[in-house]
Image (cartoon, rainbow, N blue to C red; front, side, top):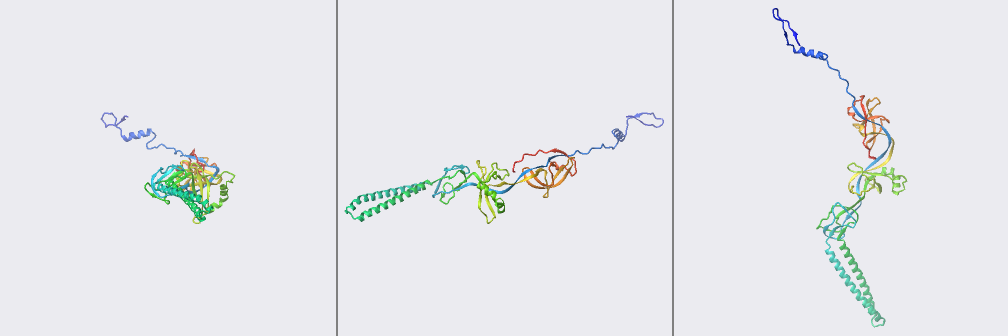
Length: 394
């Protein structure tokens, strides 16, 4: 840009390129719409939220009780004879079969006892043979009065005594044979063998627990009901145990310690004979198939039984319910996409859903994702919510 500059009289007129910087800035800004003027911005877009409609359906109501697992049969393995353990023949923690050899006890003392019993049996048989010969010889002599009758009577008594000694000696042989056989300790059942409490070289006896074998297929879950709860369901329980129930049997689920439902469903197989005077409860047992031995004796979990059904319950996903200091609320989106916070009352959880007992109606839309961006009365951009699969009864 060129600017004309006035000169003093007598001087020669000329052009110069010198321009004030502030003047240049104002000219530039004016060319863009005025110095200091800002362009107006539009309102922010409404936040995106995911919504789902309130649904109505019949849902089962479940009751749960703490349960502890135990084997169907727990065999305490104790030896029947006293002796030193020579060998352990099973692997701890693994399945064993009925009749499988578990331990060897030193058999030598029992072999010696068996040999002695056999010798005594042979001596008793020899005495019996002698008395039989005496009776055969003296019977005709006594008939001919060749010998006194008393002598024959003595022979007959000696023969009876010898027979008794033979029977006693034979019993001793059988007992010695049993003792020798009992130096081999076998499993009485199929099951899982526990850790051995008797080691090689230990002296064991009839009161020594060497290990435990647990039959775990099926396995039992023991739990207790209060007397009041038992009386409320006594008729149903009795019909189930008698097998006279006409509809479907009561299904029992087992919830493991990791909160996962055990795949196989069980059934009630035991109601104890009495109510405990100490706890006021009555013991139950449910039986579950356990072919893979996933469940082990001593484990804790929960049993779940369907006790009733909630007809026409209103359901929303659990992610749609906001809990603040034991109070519950949801964000409801109206037909014109206006969001509002509304207090509700909740019931039982059913899978991934929550039963709403008050505060919502069927078909209303509630926010499941994104309610942290929402303020009461705000317009939102509602998108459908895709709910994950619900595991029945969980």
